[in-house]
Length: 169
Image 1 (cartoon, rainbow, N blue to C red):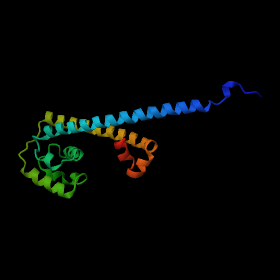
Image 2: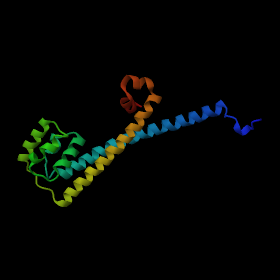
Image 3: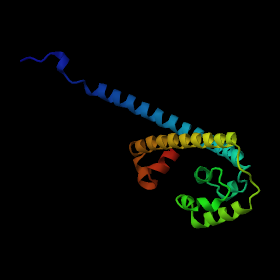
Image 4: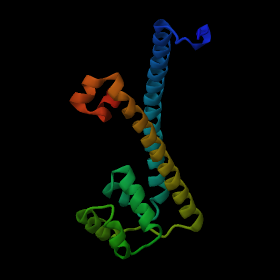
């Protein structure tokens, strides 16, 4: 049987061109993702500032005691409008060290804060939800970039790992 021209494999130059196009597309995606990650960092910082401002009337000392954005957010999620922090110690134990819990409990017992109105608490919870969405999307973007680093910078990945290599790229 004689093969028609339709059954032939594409020549090597076409495959190389396609691979170069795919590589260029991947490179552009990685660069764009890194730019978006910077934007996400700024938005997370801004949202954390908003959250501190919104929760300040309830527990003004908390933002100074928990400087990590996501620990602060998690603590707020647990404490909510509870004025007796010690009631929530067991739950806080899942996210904070015992020293942090003791410090927060002492500060909470002497705070000048007041319970938040329902509208204020809703705003706090909406901001917490938004912060969670930002963190999830940021994590997905980081995973995407890290997964591509082995191909783009294998030597750097071997030296510093894909996570740091993605930040350097």
